[in-house]
Amino acid sequence: MDWLLYENEAINNGYKVICGVDEAGRGPLAGPVFAAAVILPEGHIIEGVNDSKKLSEKKRDLLYDKIIDECICYSVGTASEKEIDEINILQATFLAMKRAVDGLEIKPDLALVDGNRVPPLDADVQTIVKGDGKSASIAAASIIAKVSRDRYMLELAEKYPQYEFERHKGYPTKLHYEKIAEYGISDVHRKSFLKKVLGNK
Image 1 (cartoon, rainbow, N blue to C red):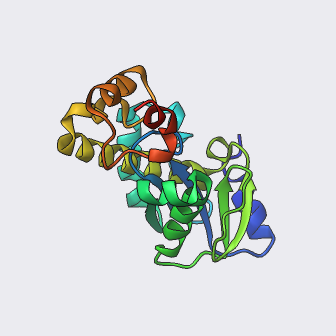
Image 2: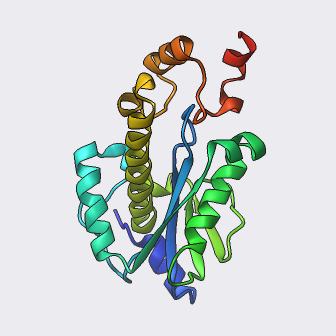
């Protein structure tokens, strides 16, 4: 498989600085949504990089360090639970992506974005469905976003030990619903994702 197909096409079309963009944490009931933007050196593939969902936690952690070492620059953006509740998860994901791209030290002229929806970025955008399994830049961004979010959820686990965030990272698991039933909804829960639970109260 040609991991640099989209990057090389973009270079052939005259783009000079290309970043990959992906998000992590659209589905959870708690915690922010994270996004990352990564610019790789031209023609560079980081060995082992793949869609973050296909990698073990240990492999993702190792690749996270490798990506940071080998990329030209990277940036992580987030949108809070409150922002998710106020503007909805899609718009909050776009906001996190915009913050990630805006945070890059070098301004990209093209963003390769995972998915089929175009976020309002300060660069041209090319969306790629299942891009984290097709583009080296997006795959790198998917790992940075996922590891960054997982680490943040471990911090939340220390502040809110009763919810056991370290085990489910805020996703809607049976255990998580049991903990919400037992302890109620916290400040870091997404109220808009828990309308049914709130309605039963």
